Structure formats: structure tokens, C-alpha cells
Picture 1 (spheres, helix red, strand yellow):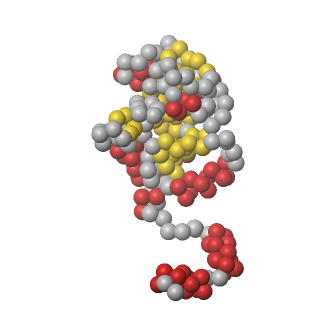
Picture 2: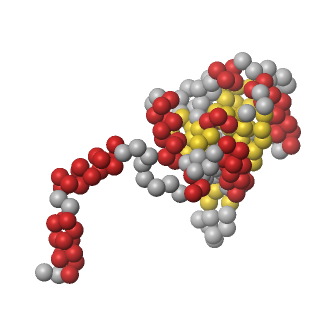
Picture 3: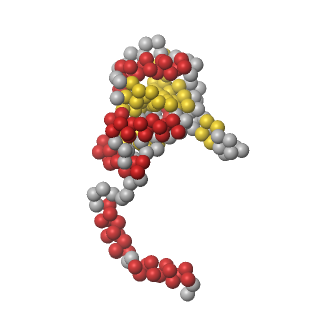
Length: 213
């Protein structure tokens, strides 16, 4: 018998199939789950600051709005700053439907490759990594996330989680069941060619997050 076989035999003898199943079941039922990395344990103002720092590290930009009605004005400012046309495309999310968009031209529906700018609403954000969590559906079509030059995303500060563990708990409590769930950290990028980082390789070249307090 080889040394490898002897090691595997000892492992099997130490944990019979029934014992492994019981151990896994007990771990899943236990409160608190497994150990958390330090960067997933932030709270309050520290969590918000960490999230914004992670966005910056991922080459995304961020701005804050104190009321939903301020979103069109903030968006118009970002479009002008980026020298983009004053128009935006979003889905059927009721959060956007009742806003006064002023001079910004709007259209609704799935994302289109020729779109200069798109707008989505994220369900959650993760301070641990600066990640946005978007649920697909008519309200926020998944193609808005990947098609278009610049992707704008609205996120409520109240939906900011510390890390993946409390995010999944919040997700289940919200009862969401989309066809797809997309986790986005910064704009699209690739260094496949010559190890030179290129933004917009497989999606938007820029990502801007509006944090709604």
C-alpha cells in the first residue's frame, strides 16, 4: 500500500460518512456561522467609509445623495463631467419611474450596446470588497449592467452589508428570487493582452455609484 493510500485510509477511518453528515448539519444549524475576516465586520460610519475606499480601489467612483429626488440632478452633473449625452436608459424600477428627470432624456428597457449610459439599482453592497449586488428582472434588466459605456448604480446606504455572510442572510430575508444575481466590483477590466490593464474589456468602461442616505 502506498503512503498516499495509507493517509487516505486514516482520514476515512477518522470520519465515517454518517459522522461527516452530522458534522455538516450541526455546523449549518449553529448560530453565528464560521469565522469572519476582519474586513467583513465593519459597522456604521466605518462600514460606509470602507465601502467607498474599496470602490475607489476598484477604479469606481462614488457620490452621495441625501434624497431620491436629488438623483436626476446628481446624474446630470456626472453626465456633463464625463462629456456624455444628457440621456439615460433604465428598466421599470418604480424607484426611477416617479422622478423628474428634467432635461435628461430617458428610455426604458434592456441594455443596448450603443447606449452611452445606463442606470440600475443595486439590492445590496458589500463593504468587504466594494461589491454591488444586482438582481435581474424587468425592473433592472441584467443587460444594463454589461452594455453601455458608463454604468450608474443607485444603492441605499441602509442596504450596505459588512461582508458576504451577512449579505446572504439579508438576501434570504428579503425573499428575492431572480433569474440571475450579479456581483459587480468596479468597471470591466482585463490584463489578458500583454499584462496591461484595460478598462471596459467586457463591459462598461466606468462605474459610478450613487449612495442614497
